Length: 280
Image 1 (cartoon, helix red, strand yellow):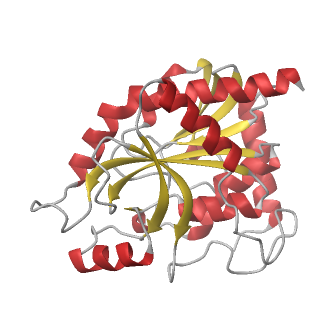
Image 2 (spheres, rainbow, N blue to C red; image 1 turned 45 degrees about the vertical axis):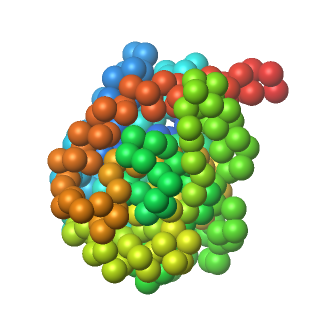
């Protein structure tokens, strides 16, 4: 288990790599959505391998590096590729970038993912803002000795996702004529896609979409006191809804097809946060 000194070492190295640049927002980009990093002004690229104790991405479509720069008028740190439990990473590995981001002063998070639609009113290509999640028995990233530097032993999870952020993003999408959903994300570890019986059970439990990421990072970010916006791209309908097999290539292709549209909304959203700071 990593010590607080290990996290501080990673944060020190990240600060060194950033020079005098001080990001205010962390963005974690899901499958096929990494092109948003290409829109940053004066980008600084930092390989995950350059940060002590940081694991590297192996999933298709995940580049495995930080990009720091100006986006939508705000100084941001982007994870171009995330870490998944199914890759063999520990939960500690997965949430490590959240914690070192907190140590360099970041207290806001936008997290995106590609997911399967469980709610039969959803269609591939549509967006869902995460209002809550279901994890059940998956491993929790907070298991082990609590580090009081990050948060309380038993953090509250009644409002993981920021209601004001949801309202702002919804308004931006709707101003572009976008139909946007708000729903519950069901976390599974993967790497296999879920069975039709599992999807039926998830629907009964109240899930609207299912994916293999996001929840561990959000638990850690909430533990750290971060404000969070979660955005899901529905790339396909989940197993058993349509009479067709699922594939990882389909997910990445759908992410790439929606990337410019979603990126534009995120840039506009960041602009509203930047204006908030200027008006304060």
